[in-house]
Image 1 (tube, one colour):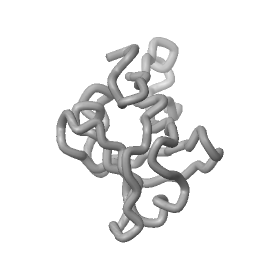
Image 2 (spheres, rainbow, N blue to C red; image 1 turned 30 degrees about the vertical axis):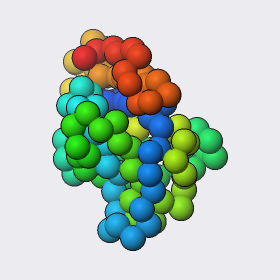
Image 3 (cartoon, rainbow, N blue to C red; image 1 turned 120 degrees about the vertical axis):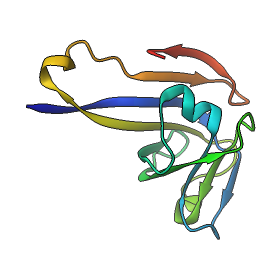
Amino acid sequence: MQVLLLKSKIHRARVTAANVEYEGSLAIDQELMDKVGLLPYEKILCGNMANGARWETYAIPAPRGSRAIVLNGAVAHLGKPGDQLTIMSYSWVDKAKARRWKPRVIVLGAHNEILDERGV
């Protein structure tokens, strides 16, 4: 049997821009994606801490070191620059390994700098 567990989390990511004209997705600084093991086009679940909105989309890399977190397409209506997001991905894990599973988590500061990391 397998269980669905948290794989990656970027906590308190601040939205830096919103572009309703883009096709869709969430652009995330490539350095942050690498730190938590997110792949380009991987499915993610996002929660906006400012307004409670939640949505699924996919991650696309923003330039490494840019600290960009950009709402694209329809989700640009669900937040604005300065809002804090929790960005999560999940993975199926064998139940035998689930008890020892540790997700890769980073907590960001006001300028999307890494303040804390776990499981990385």
